[in-house]
Length: 133
Length: 133
Length: 133
Length: 133
Image (cartoon, rainbow over all chains, first blue to last red; front, side, top):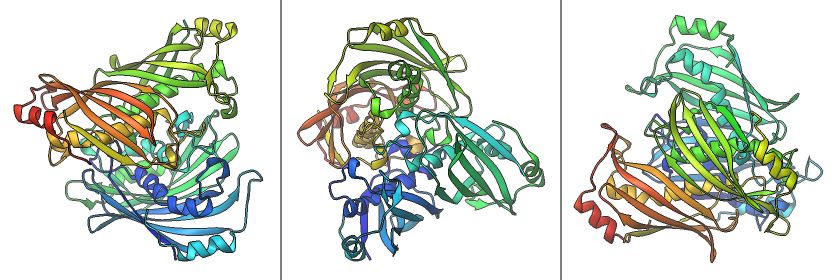
């Protein structure tokens, strides 16, 4: 299925008093890593046409992430349902997996406040796309 | 078991382009809500004596959270193991549950990078404490 | 002129690797401290009726701010012009002033993307109000 | 004098309810843009050897910054004193200048809590370096 990769530099302000990247920062990086998926659903990324919502996620921290070395966020669609799908993401620093999460996303109509079916065209893109950010 | 409650005001900068509190903000509020637990393990909250680490969490978003109305974060210890414990947290805005999460915490020695048993004294505090923040 | 005060607890994730509250956090607290002013201009705080914009600010850091002790943010209107005004804010931790800033705010119409005059009624509220958050 | 440039993608969570990047985000980007300067003072970026502190900054917002288009942060040393120096930074989105700031940094000894003179070697690097991030 579709998978993507994002390189980013941990920011100084993302460290915490223990000298590591704070645990609450990784979900922010993972949201950034899902941007190619946002583009599949909303190519212009216009906020007024936003059509995805996060239902929830499960995250596990495997090792500390440090300031001073780039990380790679990998993003992979692992399940496509009728109106929802799951995304598996990993945070790598060097050859160390520091965190992984699975996020449930819903195709959503913010006007009617209801989930909506994912079109075949989008399903196809979720199945096949392997773009790099 | 121990449970706690924290009132806070959503901040303007915590909204996102959809006009709601961004999903990545709620784990930050939940970390703030766990502060009474941090104090059970480390009464002075000194960073140099920090002895807890987040192993992971599962969060579900139930409804949007809005700017302009206070929220209540409830925090409850729901499992106490040998060196780890689980914390269930809810975010309430008015009478609406907007998010809930369960976080696995580990009593941890940052010098040796190992988990360590939770003392009977701390277990007792985790079982009984009902302080309000 | 109008002045306000906000108590808040520094959050663990707001510390940085030096063991202090990161410098980028204080402008976030100061934005939170301006909420009573937002309410003077937009009593419901509805985002769709937002009518203020930040033109800029100058901030000076006087001492480190620490996790584990509440801070008080004081907010005072110090200049009222035709369509803009200035707000002086201080961050106090115990009896120590840790940061101060002056922020220039503009009464702004987001539809036409232009500044707009401040009404006499709002000027009067800016002059007199001394509510506590 | 030394100048640097950093490309970054605004993150979805950095927008606010007005549909723009929140004003408090830009100082975070500017801190990230100063990383090459941090490296001049502390090549390993080790937190235990950190030797810079922010004395303050002045920031002006010139235009809204939007999600969905990369920004360029330019960073230039504009003054070098005995123990302090000033950094001018701009945030560009396309050909639009959206924010600019001048930050006063101090060479600082966190053990003795005192400023310390900048060595000739570092002054020379601040004068000449033109690396790209």
